[in-house]
Amino acid sequence: MAKLFEPLTIKDVTFKNRIVMAPMCMYESDKEDGRVTDWHRIHYPARAVGGSGLIILEATAVQPQGRISDRDLGIWDDGHIEGLAELVRLVKISGAKTGIQLAHAGRKATVDGEIQAPSALPFNENYKTPAEMTIQEIAETVEAFKLGAVRSDKAGFDCIELHAAHGYLINEFLSPLTNKRTDEYGGSAENRYRILREIIDAVNDVWKKPLFVRISAHDYTDGGMIPELYIEMAKWMKQQGVDLIDVSSGALVPAQIPVYPGYQVKYAETIKHGADIPTGAVGLITSPLQAEEILQNDRADMVFLARELLRDSYWPYRASKELGAEIEGPVPYKRGWV
Ligand SMILES: Cc1cc2nc3c(=O)[nH]c(=O)nc-3n(C[C@H](O)[C@H](O)[C@H](O)COP(=O)(O)O)c2cc1C
Image (cartoon, rainbow, N blue to C red; front, top):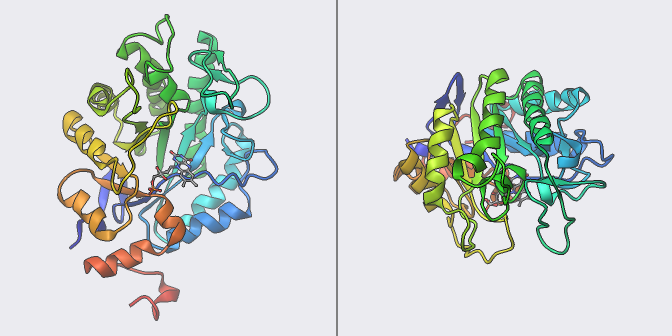
């Protein structure tokens, strides 16, 4: 049996295979109110029909000023629960588990009004200069992630992924390139990790299901973070009960990134073995054999696909054929799914 199609149980949740649809912003909340629209109702359940084991919803903002754009999905209000619950129900029809990526864009927010970050440094000349967050604002943001977790639970999600990658708020705290604070939230690795520690603890108070964290393991810039430096933080995440680290990279500061098939897999491998914690591999993984190699060689525990699933929602079905695995298809499709 191909490892890609081996079930994986984390806490009380069994994922039917190791194929994860990575979070992808759709920017389709067209009334700019963070609500689910018909596009989401079509897009996510379609990937579930295609056979992915876990569908993780796009970066979903825990605070309105933490949106990447004003068309992002949101979870800052109880009014968001109903639409998200409907998506969960539609995705589950096909036996996929549902995840949501809880996010705050920090200095990469492009919404009106003041934006916030650990330090008052803009990403580049096209972005606003953020205000340095006060201790009170940090506490409010931690609470917003907690309330996001409460609402995720009410909506019925199986899994939460905290977005600590791609140069958004949490990532900005973790890296010394974007965190120049001189208080207890800046300086040493322990201090830079503090907000994530507090968010994980706050979420754990209200959330008992699988908890993933997505990180950018490499800043591709001198003086920035590298996978070896993330091992220490990954050990802290493990101690705090994080179940899996989804290992991405880049986008913290403008930088040249050497991109090639599977270019981030080695970071997932370094962190998996360095911190003895399950990881997800992501980034230019497109072929079933490539995905199978990652799992068989124990380089990661789940394989996250993004763009390939936009091109082909039936990639898992195709992979099962190529790897000789027998999987259950949708009953109404039985005559085609042979
Ligand atoms: C349209 C699009 C939207 C994305 N939005 C998010 C997002 O909301 N959160 C996130 O962590 N990554 C996001 N990403 C990055 C993907 O999750 C993934 O890490 C990246 O595309 C590399 O994987 P791939 O080569 O399989 O596409 C996005 C990527 C694309 C193409």
